[in-house]
Length: 361
Image (cartoon, rainbow, N blue to C red; front, side):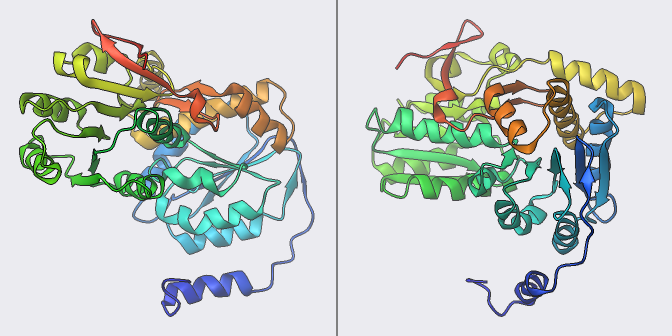
């Protein structure tokens, strides 16, 4: 509304907020009510169906309901508005799956602090800023980026920084977050690049020209780490290279080059291995006879996290949040998840002899 007061979509949202709430009877749901908000029809339906297949493969209980958002932000909001008045000993709302629907839903989630919202969309990393009741699977990346700044760059007094960001939906979200974090630092060059291009020589030349220093600035990388680090070292630059937990898995360590071992520092929530992923892929292929997509992995992991909570006898929204905070980490089929909301949970690593080892700084 602040930026587009006359836009037709802004006026449509205002109508939704201002209209009279529907008369919904008070309902006491049985413990373990899960509401899933997924695009099961429309142009993004394949993602919703994939997520659901993964979720149903892992979740052992029947206490869940599925609602079709059609991939539309306003349909998503209407569903949430109609369901949010329900009460439950333990009510968890999972979704929306698409980032474009999430932007409409997040401010609403923030007002409903007695409910737990699990946000499966990985590409909007600032979702956790809207409230303690919002559980985001992108929290690990959020805390890792903060740790790079607060526990490495500031204490080591790095002055000149070049940041390579992929031109993707997640990359745009990272860029927005970095603008907030680094607003008081002036010597920063943001370089956007296509994740499909392996050649970074022109980008590296631009970086050297910008800082007027053939030794090169320190570098933060969010994608294409092997190509970028190799080309930076080949150029003769002495840059330190920092990155996130996206690359801290056993496969990456095994295929890493000497360039990575000598230069790259990883800020990571933990080391992930393929055993969980392989188990899921095997189960998924056995049941559905095709390979799972990214959304199926995420659905599977959320189902298992909820299983774990149920098995621990969690009976309320607040106890569920405490459960996740105490759990801190979860090693899923898709990635290593961090639920603790502190940069202190992030560790720094280097690769030595094809293994990740703690980095002392």
